[in-house]
Amino acid sequence: MNTLIWLPAEKIPVLIAFLCVAAALLGVFLLKRKGKSFKIRALPGASAIEEAIGRATEMGKPVFFTSGTGEIDRMATLAALSVLGEVAYKTAQYGTPLFYPNNDPVVATVAQEVVSEAASKAGHPEAYKPENVFFVTKSQFGYTAHASGLMERLKPAATLYFGTFEGESLILAETGFAQGAIQIAATDSTIQLAFFLVACDYTLIGEELFAAGGSLSGDQEVLGSIVAQDWLKAAVILLLLVGAILATFTTFNLASRL
Image (cartoon, rainbow, N blue to C red; front, side, top):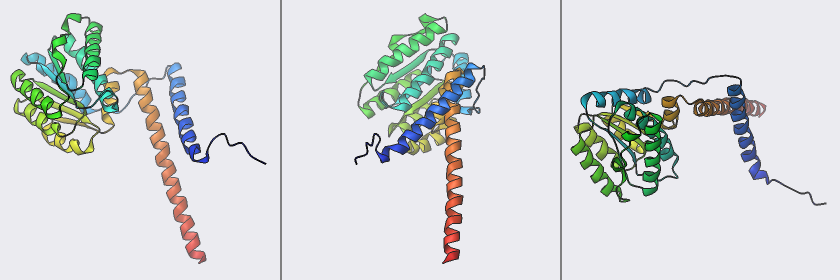
């Protein structure tokens, strides 16, 4: 007698993981419907962004933003665009010029919409300057040379590096450091983090990049999803601890019987 198998055995762990994620997100949604507000721990690097923009405003200098060489399908690039929206909102409020050269035409197009919308939201649509958010080239070091030269000409008071970075990270960070700018960086690349840590004033490490946008905006939906992820990570850690204890005692019992 043939048994109909509607789900392959190797896919069952994926289904369980999906159901756990869905349950966590549903729990957060229901709590939000009941008026629950969510908070995450303070991120010094994210909190320093407003200070950096304020310093640039006081000095009459621009803010420089870059998301590195990531394309639009990278999660780090999407997180960088989320931060860009908050940066553009603040710079529009303060009347501070914002420059964002980009090495991907799709990201540049999306960034123009993000900055334009943020300026309108701040009540200063005229603050959006299309010529300040632009595509340079797909060449990694061609883009790096242009961005570095732009920093030397503009002499920004604040430089923000959020997104995907490769070999250009140290070149950009050293150029910004030479201008005396407050430097804040965030990337999911563990290799490039080392360069940012030594060259920048604040560095957001790993997944802090993805939480930065929610931390800046205070958006409860974003914060709720971050809290749900924290619940899931806590559950995974607990399961690992329980599994390790059970495996240890099982091994001990087998060894004693032998």
